Image 1 (tube, rainbow, N blue to C red):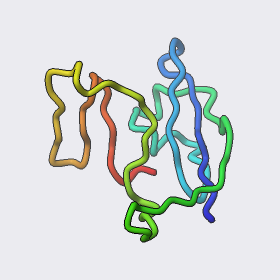
Image 2 (cartoon, helix red, strand yellow):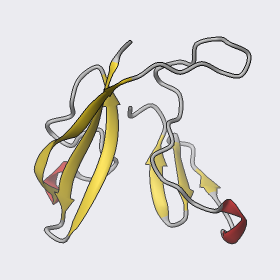
Image 3 (cartoon, rainbow, N blue to C red):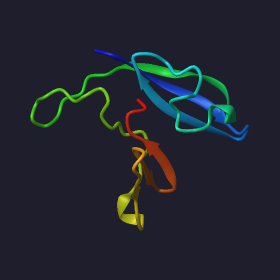
Image 4 (cartoon, rainbow, N blue to C red):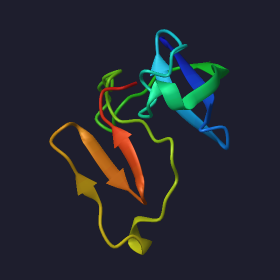
Length: 99
C-alpha cells in the first residue's frame, strides 16, 4: 500500500491549508494548488497507508480524486470545471492529478 502524506502550510501568513500527496511529501508546496511563494511553514501533518477499491472490487487509481473537503452540494448554486484540470467547488479550487 502506498503512503499518503497530508501536507500542511500557512497561506499568506494567515490561514492553514492542507493537501495530499501519495508516495512522497510535497516539501515545496508545488502540488498544493496555491502559489508556493505564498506558503510558509510547509510540512507533513500526518501520513497514512492508502488502499482503496471501487464498489466493483477493482483497485482505484492512485491518481484518482480524493475527498479532502466536506461540502453539501445541495447548498451550492454551481460548480465550475476548467480545461486545466481544475474544479471550483464552494469557492475553493481543486486540481486533478496533483495528489
